[in-house]
Image (cartoon, rainbow, N blue to C red; front, side, top):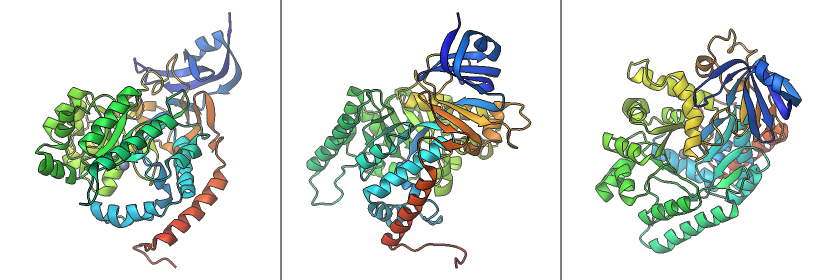
Length: 458
Ligand SMILES: [Zn+2]
């Protein structure tokens, strides 16, 4: 007996990233509601299912939606404005923080919608946010109707840096904000839910780490925190705790499979072992590392982490770019070059980092990250009728080494087609571009910061 489905994508080359890592030529995917109900050879699937809507897939390479393990939703209005040649601390103190503080809730909402649009149109269907410093609810509400899946949070910090600060009060306030976010946006089946997200570095006390971990554990949620992009964090932890950052966090009992540490460029072998032992996730943001001069290719122990079994995830970080395919290309190349070893991070490993590994870090490994029966229908169709995809020999290699997110033709999240023929169906793109320009111009004007350009702008 034939079964009815909503959508049948028929004839595509499918990179499933399923448990057998099958690549299916002339394949088909049947979608009912929010789930994949069948996947396999087109002839087999087409014989069994009748679809309300059949899509001729012969022009497409299908992949799971990408998972962005670290993104700042509200930094998109500043892309291109920050000068390149700045030390980490100066970039943060003179540029990033003042510009952040100039944002209105409306600016933040526009920035977040632009980030989501940028992700959806390049095939990212799920993200873990870094945390929203300002206007958390305005931002979260602004992306609720975009159709993307994500975990968001207030960006908690509590360390008393000024002598007059009351440490206990600061920690209590930060914990209350994390609890309020979890209560306001519970993981109740909606696409967007809150996690207790920490800024990390040295901004969180041990009490906040332990409180956030307890909240994450009791809510089935996770934590993310920045750590060790540059040498400052190991230096600070060694001076103040006598231990390296990961050693200190391990001693607090706050590591684990629901914890994602972001950057982790300046680590040592003992930290790698602890990350593996505790099942913690590491999110590498190669684009941010390259632009920020973090030294990831020189000192980063990512090949050692992979060998030790650490779950490695990819992220895009700031507002410059949200194309996970670009990030995957960087990941596949950085350590081949740095170590002069072409066996490091082959294309299929980079794709795993952008899909199944990201899903695991978010506790969604049984729902997303692979195209398989029972999984959520989070699907990307890459347009093979483009120069970077023809001739089509090996879709896995070409996904990483030839293509990028600009070839994304269609995207489904939860069975809903959110990108169709290169256009987002949930966001008015032209209106958003216009609003983003107005908001960004106002932000720059209010900041009083100069436009730095190597070349004269007339
Ligand atoms: Zn970040």
